[in-house]
Amino acid sequence: MQTLPAFKLVLWTSLTLASLHFGCGAKCSGTNSPTVKQTQLEFKNPPKFMVEVQNNCPMCPVIDIHVKCGNFSQALVNPRLFKVLAFDDCVVNGGLPLGPLQKLSFNYSHQKYLMHPTTWYFQCE
Ligand SMILES: *[C@@H]1O[C@H](CO)[C@@H](O)[C@H](O)[C@H]1NC(C)=O
Ligand SMILES: *[C@@H]1O[C@H](CO)[C@@H](O)[C@H](O)[C@H]1NC(C)=O
Image (cartoon, rainbow, N blue to C red; front, top):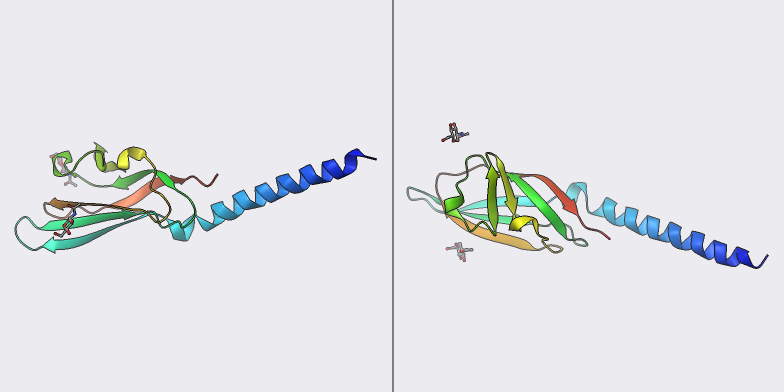
């Protein structure tokens, strides 16, 4: 049979691609979740905070990061960086990708808003 080697190659290729895809997905979920870190810069009234949103995946971009943000006010930040969509729903970088290990940062002056990421998608293809 002359078709057999070709068939084996196709099978091998698809298995390899499948395992690469799976491997990346496994590496970039769970422990690589994006993080939102807040550091207090000034202790006046109102206090000032630096927010750093980081993609902790070393291999894949992450898109569409939504963050619980309470009553965060759009007036405090450029919506291209951090857009308030609704109460407790803000989106980072207009939903556009943060590259592997990329960080996006902004400062705001207000009483602290608690923030943490709720949903995101890794782009591992
Ligand atoms: C958010 O703002 C609304 C309207 O000002 C207010 O009714 C609500 O209690 C606030 N929620 C929080 C968690 O501060
Ligand atoms: C936030 O404040 C810090 C300290 O003042 C400053 O170094 C940094 O450049 C500021 N970041 C932005 C995005 O303005």
